[in-house]
Length: 150
Image (cartoon, rainbow, N blue to C red):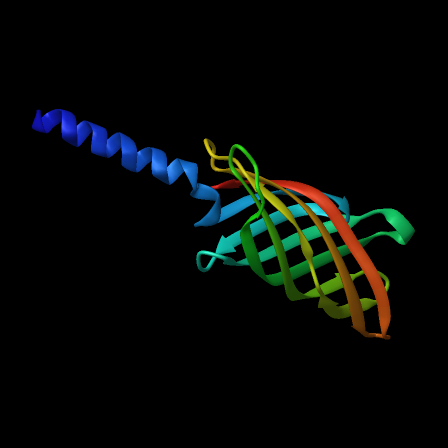
């Protein structure tokens, strides 16, 4: 009897870790859009995370971009029957390298679907921003992505 309880407790603990693995730990994956690249997300609390990306584009002469954001999530922003659909918003910085070096702020917001049975999330993001250097310029990034959480 004691052995069965221990086995059930281990199974329950493992399934709880998998069922909500996307709102803790480190996730790595890809974002496809403007720009396209590698996406990282590190949860810092139950509703907060740091998100970053290394991306590139071949549009308008091409560029390379690095960005980082602080995000706040509403975990059950939209009610779904399985998993969680979170809304999020945040603020961050970006560095874009092309013919000139551009530095600015970004204000990402989006939706993040977290599967209930797999340590994977799918997200859709729009990030308007304002370059401060070399000139003040408004711009918009966006894309869809997927991440695996370790």
